[in-house]
Amino acid sequence: MPVRNVPVAEVGPLASDVMLSAPDTVSGDMTVAAARRLLENPRLRMLLVTEGERLIGAISRERLAAHSDGDLALGRLADPDWPRVGPLETVPEVLELLETADIERLPVVDSDDRLLGLICFNRRKRHFCIDAAG
Image (cartoon, rainbow, N blue to C red; front, top):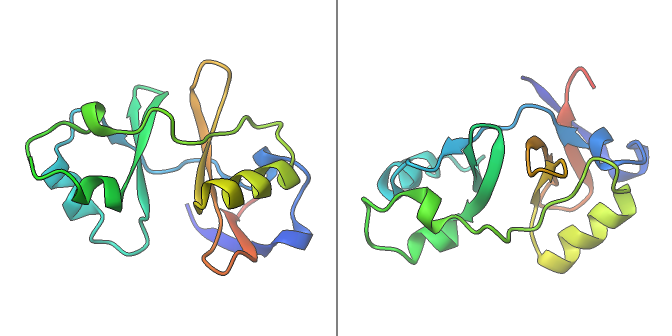
């Protein structure tokens, strides 16, 4: 789905207003070697690892680089404690968590950890990437 960049001052009040509704995900059985190939794309900064609709965790380039076993499954390596928010968190709360965790990507999940979307904050920390139709 096409995306557009929206300045922080122009977004809606909730996490659900600033999320991509159909983020790319990978399966927990994907190998580290396959994940490294995916992350050669500079647009991807981390991977969301899912089991069905449920978020298992996320994995950064740095975490991948720390593991030499290319056959290791991402489900065993993904960080289950990667920060995440619910859809009703406010944008100021989202911004605070992005800053505190020093990250630019934040999964949006429901109370059962079902992945609902992804908050994508640009590197200059001025815009959110949201669905073009949103």
